Length: 81
Image (tube, rainbow, N blue to C red; front, side, top):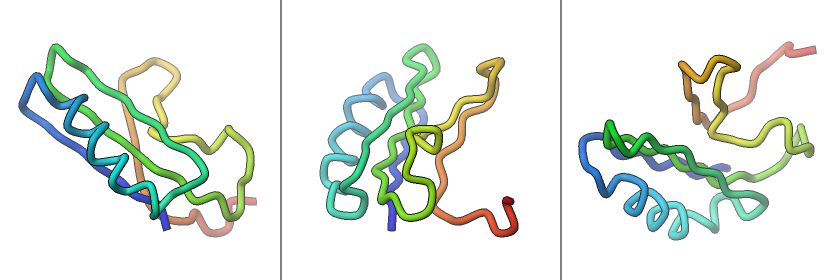
């Protein structure tokens, strides 16, 4: 199971999420990722437990090609093949 942390509304969002994801390391020991927008006071963090997709292509948080959308989730996409 992965770990997810998010903070909205403070300039310290990145620091807080970094601290939170360190505490969630046991939920996702295989990888760690973070995204933040300091101007808006938003940060997302993710710790990853690799089960199905072992590549770095599934690293999170995921950012859309145009950078408009950012996603961090804990789940499995069924029938993805």
